Structures are given as structure tokens and as C-alpha cells.
Length: 332
Image (cartoon, rainbow, N blue to C red):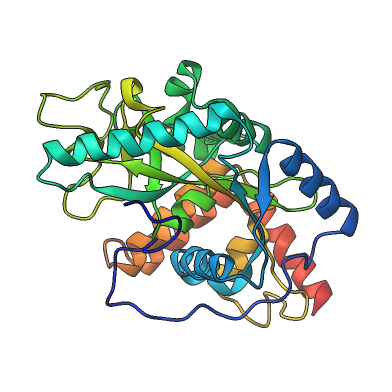
């Protein structure tokens, strides 16, 4: 049986509670919230009430996966795919359940069904997926979703290389539920700062490792159902084209934003998460991804603090960094 929202995380040993945050409408004007609600409801999505256990479970899991950005991230809203609103959606949900049972019967009773994040280019794309499923035209674009290269010549070579390394086969790429941060950094903020991601259920079955830069587009043999970047601790799932609408089911669209507080200026609290939140309004997703990767390498001791500092300045650019620091002095 497939539960609707239980066990979003697989890690039972980490019971860290999420940081408290304010109302889901904080930082977003009433007009924007009402307009978004109307659009989502017209597309057959139901608002998940903030007081419900379902919302609290999703919020805890999402913020937990945001790691060091947890306290600077606001979950604004959660909307659930209402599979009962039309026959097509009901049929796709029934199909997903049947394929789950079929894959499970071939994998010793375990279909390996997980929650995963999908990042689209915009809210409209996510709504189209919820309504009609994935389309073949998204396959070649999904690998580097929202990772367009900066026009800055100082960063283009580095980011081109990282985009190539970010590719693991041709298919639908999703991020495990516990890697909310990796998915969130690939989103594009709207004028009001809001961002959107799609939380899906995926049937992984038996997985195989797909190397970085691979152009693989189908299982290497009949014993495999899907791909991952690493078999031990995957940070990316790859669902092949043939299975994109049978092995992925969109469950929720979440709306969030990064919220660096003016009450805590960067110059008085020079933390990397706060800097990242402020930079999110100015940088391309590809640059944000590079910053997250570089910071993680520094935390893991793979590069020195000096190497990380140089890499960060190269990605951000001296002009933008100087502008942000100047504004922070004015706020202070």
C-alpha cells in the first residue's frame, strides 16, 4: 500500500525538529497569494491547510532537507494533486499503483517507491505536468534545468564543466526528498520572491549507477528499472523516458521563498547561509548550484577555506559582492 505522505524521509535516526517559522503567507502580498491560490485551484490542486498533520509533516521534511538554509527559508503553501477531480488523473494514479505492484513483484516484493523533488522552469510547467504528465520534449532540458550559464566570462568555464558533470543520463532527473536544498537552488524566483517545486512519488525498483556526463537513455539490462548517481547514497534519481509517466506521480506543489531578514544584516552576522539567501535574488540557478557544491566541498574538507573563498568570489563576481556589502553597511 502506498501512503499519501508518510515516511517522506528514509532516515529514522535523525529526529531533529524543524525551526519554527511564521504564517505561510509571510513575506508575500495578499494579492499574490490569492492569485496563486486561484490558479492552482483552477488546475485541480487542493490547498493543504497549515494546521493539518499533512502540512506539518511536509514542512518538517522540506526544511530538514534545506540544511543550513533552514532558518532562512519560509514554506508559503502546499497544494495537493486532487486525483479525483478528473478521470485522466485518476487513471494515472491507478496506473502508478499497478506499476508499483508489478515492479515490486519482480524485485522481491519491494518496488523501492520514494519521494523525490522535481524542478521545472516555472510554475506553469509544473501545473502542466500535474495535469497531463511529462512530455518527451522535457527530457533533453531536464538534466540541467534552470542552469543557464552566466554571461560573465569569469564564471562560464567553471559552470560549463559543472553542468556537464551534473548530467547523469537522459531522462527525468529528480532529487531525493532529503536533498531539498539541492533542488531548491535550481529554482527561479518570481518577482515576489516565491519559488515552486514538485514533490513526486517515484518507482525506482532496482537501480544502477549512471556516470557523470553519461548519455545513457534506458536501462543497461532487464534487471534494472532506474538510475542513480551513486548507489550507496544517491543524490539524484533518473527515471527513463519509457517510464516517465508510469513510474512518477506528482503529489504536491510547494511554494517557498528565501527570507533574509533586514533585522539581521549580513555585516553584523557574516554567515554563508545569509549571504546565499541575499544572492538568490541576483544569481542564475547554475551559479547557486556551484556555490552550494563549493561550500559542501569546503565543509567536507575537500578544499581549503582559501580555495573556497576564491571560488566563491569567482562565481559571484567582485562587482556584485561589493554591491551587496555596500548595501549591508547602509542597513547597519
